[in-house]
Image (tube, rainbow, N blue to C red; front, top):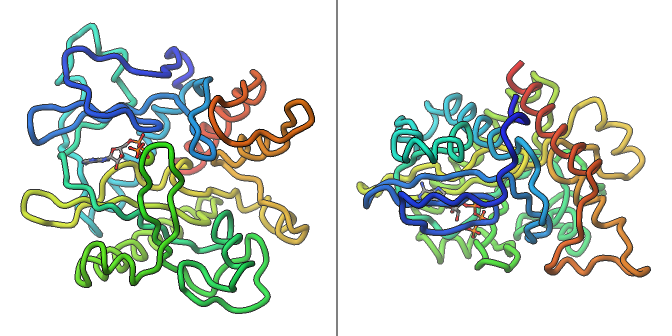
Length: 305
Ligand SMILES: Nc1ncnc2c1ncn2[C@@H]1O[C@H](COP(=O)(O)OP(=O)(O)OP(=O)(O)O)[C@@H](O)[C@H]1O
Ligand SMILES: [Mg+2]
C-alpha cells in the first residue's frame, strides 16, 4: 500500500512553525492549541536514529494508531481533533503529510511513560534478573525471558531528554512527579487499555507483550491519551505461532516490532567489536530495510484483517 510513496526521513513543511523533531515524528504548531504530527519513516533503535528510512513505516504507524484510538474511544479520551491533516498545509506540501499525519490537540505532556507489561522482556527481563522485581513490583520466582506474567503490571519510566535513555521508576516516584490522584488514574487507565487491546490482538494472533502510553492534560485538566498508541514502535508485538518454541529455547520470540533490527544490530561486529549504541548508527543493508518494512506491513495486515 504505502511503498509507492517515497520514503521520508525528515519532513520539511514551511507553512507551519516546526516545534520539535522527535525520534520519529516532526511536530508542527497549528495555531496555539493544535499540533500537526508527521510520522516520518525514521527508525530509532537503542534510542539512536538510524540513517536509513524504512519505506511505508510512518504511514503504517499512523494508521495503526488511528485504528486503536477508534477502538479505545470508549475507555479514554484521546488527542485527535477529527480534522484532516491535509487541511492545514499548502497543496504542495500534501504529499509529505498524507497518510502519515495526525492533527491533534496540543496537550500539556505528563513526563511519565506509562508502560504496561503482560510478559517479561527487554529492560523488564534485565531488571527481574537483578532483583526479581520490575519498577519495584515484586514478581514470582522462576520466571524466564518472555514469560507471561501472572497479571499485567504497570512499570513506569521517566521520559528522558533527547539522546538519553528512558529510566524505569517506581510507582512512588510517579506519585512524587504527578501527585497521588493522577498517578492512580494513569495506572488504572493504562492497565485497562492494555488489557482491552491485548485481548483483541490475541484474537488476531498477536501477543502484545508490553506497551508504552503517553498522556497529557487538556485545557480542562482532563487526562487524555496522546502520541502514538499500540504500534509496533511503542509495543512488543509477537505473532502467537512463534512464541512457544522461542520461549522454550530461551530466545526472544520473533516479533513485528523493531526487535528484528535490534537483534541485527546486536549481532553486528565492526572491526570485530559490537556497535557501542551511540551515533552514528551503522548502515542498514537493503535486505534488513526491506525485511523490517515487511514486518510492519504484516503486523498491520494481521491486526486489521
Ligand atoms: N497531543 C500532544 N500534545 C503535545 N505533545 C504531544 C502530543 N502527542 C505527542 N506528543 C509528543 O510529541 C512527540 C512525538 O515525537 P516522537 O514520538 O518522535 O518523539 P520521541 O522520540 O518518542 O520523544 P522525544 O520527543 O523525546 O524525542 C513526543 O515528544 C510526544 O510526547
Ligand atoms: Mg515517541
